[in-house]
Image 1: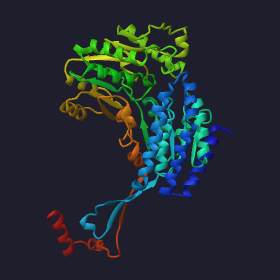
Image 2: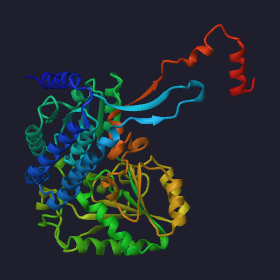
Image 3: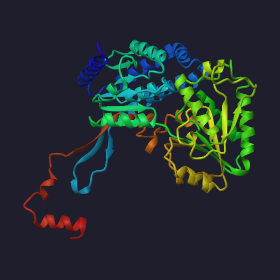
Image 4: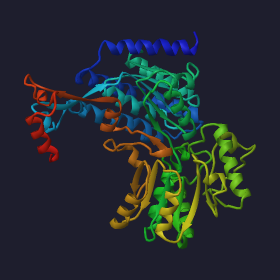
Length: 477
């Protein structure tokens, strides 16, 4: 059986199943979320093992912290609130149309497609799934080719919780990304690179499929002139090295006061040493996902070196790095590396890095840092370190980004009551919590009129006394 036939078969089964239950009750939705939660908890150790196999070395604690726990907490958050979210919301009816009632009802969209990336394949499949189930939809998930073991495990987990006409996981070897994107989904969600996001949107446009695109970009971290440097460096180091920088909201580059660059470098080195005194055989030090990504990062680094950037590897134990033929290369582990004296001609300043390379860019005035950010495509996240409320408010209102986090990195993503999504080249649409429920629902405006019909007073023929009075009341003549 071809992949297209299998995709079509399950898609049509879900379409058919949805027509038989167009408005699942709150009890049904909570039960579906309960099954998903129990499945994740039951399979958590298998998922951790599978991800470690896919990465070569994926820190188990990072999987727990960034994939398992946020997925479960997201489900629990939705379960507690979905009954309230489902209730029709009352709206104001204009006086000219009285007597009548206005309201909005929230209906499931139907069959939702989710395309999952490789960097956080559990959280970035289970999060959208939880939101779509809370909204009452059927869901098909297409996994990345780069995490085949995780895909197999998630497929088994979901299969143990749901019939395929309700939720289905498709591996990359079962279904191509293009054939998946071209289906006539009621909503399509994609998480991945900006370049692939453009392809997804083109494919979806032929069916007028609405899309949510969670992309990436070059998320800046700005350090204010007087923020404690050891605190900023430690929090930036955590955000950069978590999952070895393979995070869509990882700090991509640092904007640092000119007179404090050396202080940042020293504090950053100290922070990395505290977190990873050794790297080579450290199971907590995650590998780059595959050789292709590893080579890409090496090429970016070589390009910066050739264009006279200052390269500062952070390697606390001074373990040997042979990036060509040695064991580190085969393990796909890299030293965290700071880059100074970078310029716009370097690939490291043109592409989303998605790895443990961190350019440090000096600025003289805070306004210069703001201008730097605003002159570039809008990022998925912006990080700013400052305890001055006035300056914080100025940064928040004079920059654009998908989200912002003050005095830390990464953790805003896991806040269930905050919307998550990009803007411009970093994406469109948003989900998480109530915003996810709304994204995967159709908000239908409804006007209900009683037996008495006030509208007849404005029916033709026009020009009567009552009509002239209405005009005078509303527009003065």
